Image 1 (tube, rainbow, N blue to C red):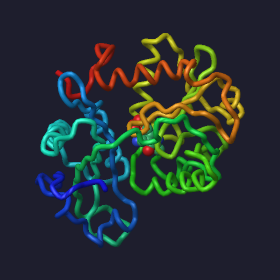
Image 2 (spheres, rainbow, N blue to C red):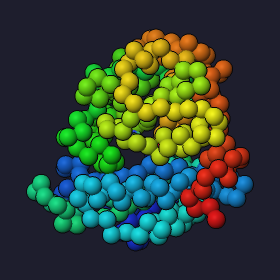
Image 3 (cartoon, protein in one colour):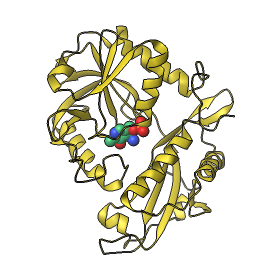
Image 4 (cartoon, rainbow, N blue to C red):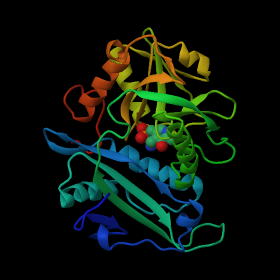
Length: 300
Ligand code: PMP
């Protein structure tokens, strides 16, 4: 259950109870997946709950809308402030925040006639669990970059993610790994992929992935840690030859990968640089250390 009787949400400038809120059955977003969303996390820090990189998430929400033609008329700074109010109203500290820009009634395949914004939140543990993941290379590939705007976090794109996850779980794996339309490594259904060999980390280049905000945070952390990161087109065989690998995303955080199609990595996760990156990420989001390295949205 994502809300209780008194959970509050924000809808089009108003505060209301989630239990008394409804969406329209004729909404374009419901019928065609033509909407845009974000996934943001807040963490307990010594200064109270802090939303990690809130501004960057709302900027991406704006870019996602603009790229697929949904008018974005909101002030990003105001949305950030509203999100802090949302946490306060619900007494949330470690929460997952879901902004959704959705389109009202319109059964034609044309620009929306009416646009709404919802921001809701709930308390959520690590999305992919605490165990290292057993991945299956999916029979589904990421959408062709000429069929959608890959970098937009659009609702309809997630049918692909649901198909891949369902297939992987049905076959007894924890999670899927999707290739791009050419057979190069792309990403997980809701997370970006990194794999390491020696002191170098590799990650699929932009083109067929959602270039995550966590992925960007990993780049910055690695710069501090003296780990070189390379972006490119890599094959599954290159992943199998890695010392370690992990997924990263706002919901997933940094999640170690145990195996891909049953193939184990050379190093145990615990003694890999991946584990150190995972620890550095956890420290950063809780503002425990190294938060001077780069500005954290919302922190003055
Ligand atoms: N790829 C996909 C397909 C995703 O849904 C997500 C989650 N938003 C990510 C990557 C990671 O993005 P972020 O780090 O911005 O959460």
